[in-house]
Image (cartoon, rainbow, N blue to C red; front, side):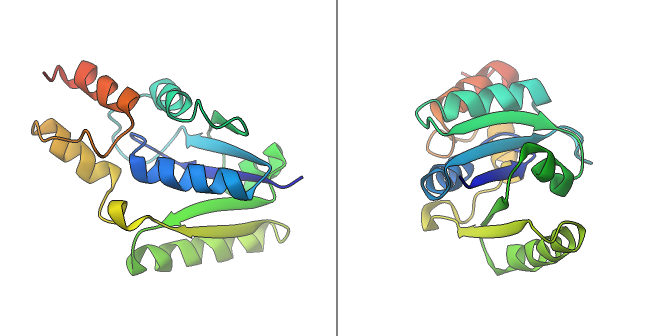
Amino acid sequence: MTKAIYPGTFDPVTNGHLDIATRASKLFDSLIIGVYDKPAKKLLFSTKERVELWKGAIANLPNVSVEAYSSLTVDYAGQSGAQVIVRGLRMSSDFEGEFEMALMNKSINPNLESAFLMTNLHYQFLSSSLLKEVALLNGNIADLVPPNVLAAFKRKLALP
């Protein structure tokens, strides 16, 4: 049985993230969405909220679960029994950073593999940071996030 993790901050989950998770769920027997608890950036949603947003978004994927973690991702993968770390790539600039990270992870845990999925062309421009900026300026993000995330944005930002 092949178990994978899809780690990230996910502040918030976007349709691009969901696309990667959905596709990865078809490649692995079990997929854990790992919501990183201690990022070095300002968050809009708490860890608990980000976990709940993911749970709502993946409700139709029976082999996918969601949990928070606060350790090194490579250590979290080992503790969860995962053999693979899944990452999404939007453009070539993503590849450089992800390649370095994969090599570092491999040096720490030689048994851990990295799998990179190319983002759907429809979401290639999409990032959580850009999405939050558009939402804060009352832009339409309805086609960019799952319905439960759109509702959470509206509650959090008191949007119409």
